[in-house]
Amino acid sequence: RRRSAALASSAFAPLCGLRLLAGSSRVLCLAAGAGHAIDALHAEGVSDVTGIDLVDFPPLVRRADPHHLPFSDGAFDLIFSDDPSGISGALFPSQIAAEAERAVRSGGAIALAVDRHLDPAAVAALFKRSRIVDMRDITFGGSQVRMLILQSNGTTSNSH
Image 1 (spheres, rainbow, N blue to C red):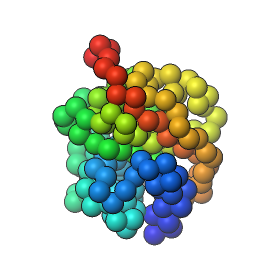
Image 2 (cartoon, helix red, strand yellow):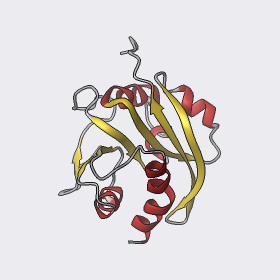
Image 3 (cartoon, one colour):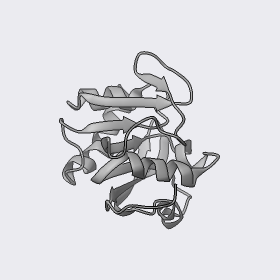
Image 4 (cartoon, one colour):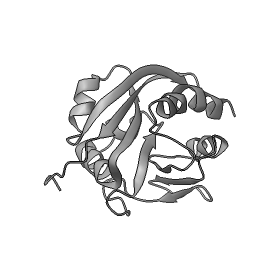
């Protein structure tokens, strides 16, 4: 419950303020673990939330490879990850970034928790079709992370 409250105030409030998250949003949670972010989004009134991770964690999280997302282009309004190792610890972070950009709709958002010691410009450089619209240092479950919020510019890319 504490993690859900932290997500609501630290991560979801800025997304709502930027009009990138609403009750009607279709959200994909990457590196969803046990599904804490999914629970928190449901508590915020977002009903269409899908959680994926490298392992199943029923009933909230199903197994899927973030390097090859099993979703159509533009399927989500928001792609969210509260796991700071989700992109920085990935084997091929640029492939995960490309897949996130493919799966989010034009004008949609990608919100990622990253290690506070990482250069935000270096992380943002992985995303070829998005720009940073907000960045803030927050605390999740005792860990201090940096939340990057990027917005898709909707241009096409031949990087696949």
